[in-house]
Image 1 (cartoon, rainbow, N blue to C red):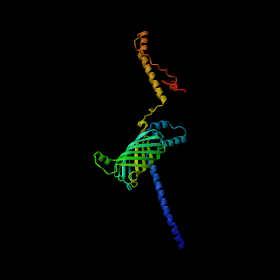
Image 2: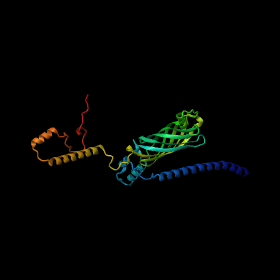
Image 3: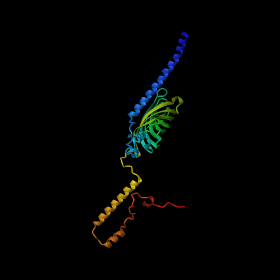
Image 4: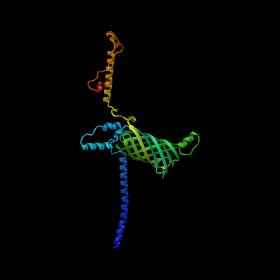
Length: 316
């Protein structure tokens, strides 16, 4: 019995330790899950109308829901996730970052522009400043990065970037014609990963972690954690109202309406003139020939061949 008890005790001790470590991992995962869920809920990600302030999103989803409950729920779920409306858009970016302060203390800020060439590919160009203890001074320069992300409202991303900056102290010494032995340039390349969260259709919050490999020395490389806000996204950074974005056929219709109104005004003004006789009218027509405009088509939309100024394409 003593041997069995001793064996039992020996077997239970590692098992209890393993269960304790596994419990810590599970508790950590649960905590991360609830923090993520609260973050998503706080950003309003459960709303299907989150991006109605963006003209392209509103044009796509402003129509009333159609179909049964299943179709409505499917469209609502799609709207909650869909962030493809940002393609070809740009916005202003501001952010800050800091290191873990153990290997190399660094803090910085940046302000610039973010552009989406496609819904999943974005780039950033920013004027950045950084205080870096490993390199010895404060630097001001250019920070650029490219991110590949999912075209969704909560969008994980990976990317890479480059930084090049000039030592502010060295620059002032050069202006004052003083010699300096400090580092006068800081260059860095870094891989980056993080997440974008669209708060609205025109405002994006970003959190990231990057590892900066600098030209100073490998022992001065450091992890850099950033938080940034991009705002005023939209075509030409404008807030379009309903009906402001028009198709080509609508533009043609507006031009036709304006021409018809001008013709009505011209006819009214001519009818109010005194009768000066046929000869005087002929002389006026000869001096000021009327515009040779094509008559309004029966349809509101002009085909390319019937449009004013159409030229036949060259033939071989």
